[in-house]
Length: 282
Figure 1 (cartoon, helix red, strand yellow):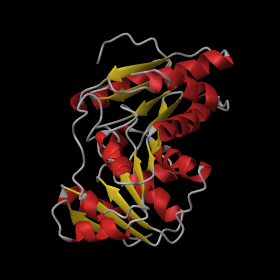
Figure 2 (cartoon, one colour; figure 1 turned 135 degrees about the vertical axis):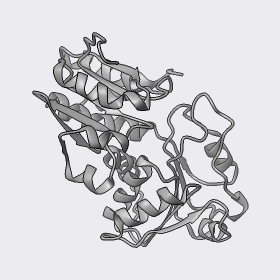
Figure 3 (cartoon, one colour; figure 1 turned 45 degrees about the vertical axis):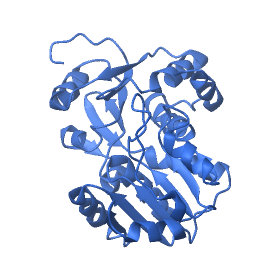
Figure 4 (cartoon, one colour; figure 1 turned 60 degrees about the vertical axis):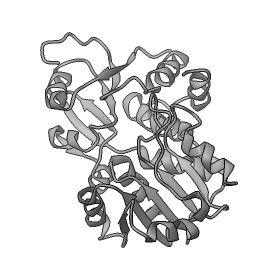
């Protein structure tokens, strides 16, 4: 992206970026408040992340969101990290203050807000987290803050799983295991909340789904898929057929976005406007 003329004020970077709905909700919020900003989605390849940060420093970008697969990689190119970003080890929001790039993580705020709104208490509960990327780290940090009893993180990359274990061992003893571990099914039986943080099932790969034995899943467990495009994933369809209460990622998207919006503009985000902007978006 070096040498490109970028005239937008706010945005989101990721690769691919076609699934993102952030521009719809942020531009609606900007319009509702009459602010002089524009938010744009940008496809940025992993090898271009460093150059994009350098470019943004010299342009009028006030800030930007960061999504898959850059949430961890971008950290080394920023000037400063907020405490939450340091602990989580991932960044989803960047604020540009006169060329000083500071990374934040609002994902854990967005993750928790819908649960609190539905009065779902996680205190002393058993949590099962699917996936071991940047979003999983934010979820784990949120769960720790809510004083859950146990956290088990399931994934297919043991290096990432070990990183999560080591990242939080000062705060909580997280259990990690591979998708193929025989104990996975046992944890499904006792889980009070199951959170999918993987991109499996996200647009356009609607038929993908995290591996799980629904026969073993506690039917009272809340199944929370952080994917918001599509609004109903195959994972959630199967969970509902199993008799589980379900929750998708749209509320998390809006709430994490609202937190970032406040950082960039110093204005409270119009939450309802942002929700309305997502209706009908495919």
